[in-house]
Image (cartoon, rainbow, N blue to C red):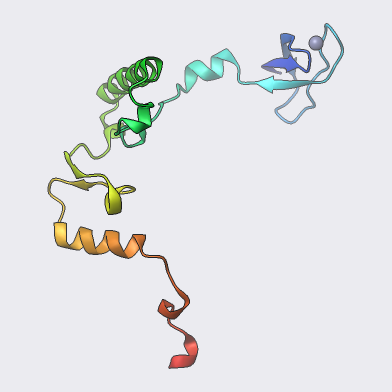
Amino acid sequence: MILYDFTCADGHRFEAGIASMHAPDPACPVCQRPSSRRPSAVTMAGQADPGPSRDEMPRSWQAVRGGERSTLDGWRKLAVEREKLEHKYPELGGDRRPVLAHEGIFASNPLRVGDDIPSRVTEAIAETKPTTQAEIPSKDTK
Ligand SMILES: [Zn+2]
């Protein structure tokens, strides 16, 4: 027997035990409509959401809607939580070297202190250049 939380189409929430993970979801005890499983509180506490990583956080004024107050507050809260999490699990910290460039060709993969700059530039340009038919080596040209 496994305990799950369910929500029915009408929004009633209830807890029920089912025989196995693959057993059908029970009907709502209030309105008898079909229900669907919700992640249980126990599961959520067991595997906390790590939230966005540093690389996923906004870096520009545009990304925070020009500094809109609630957007900034929301991101600040996430950043503080992430900071605490990384303090506890340093392996989640990722690459913490200072970023030298994160725009244009480095938008998807920032240039950091200690990177070999010429090779990173070549790499980044190659990645941003759209691949055309002519650049794909054909078997016929051998
Ligand atoms: Zn219901």
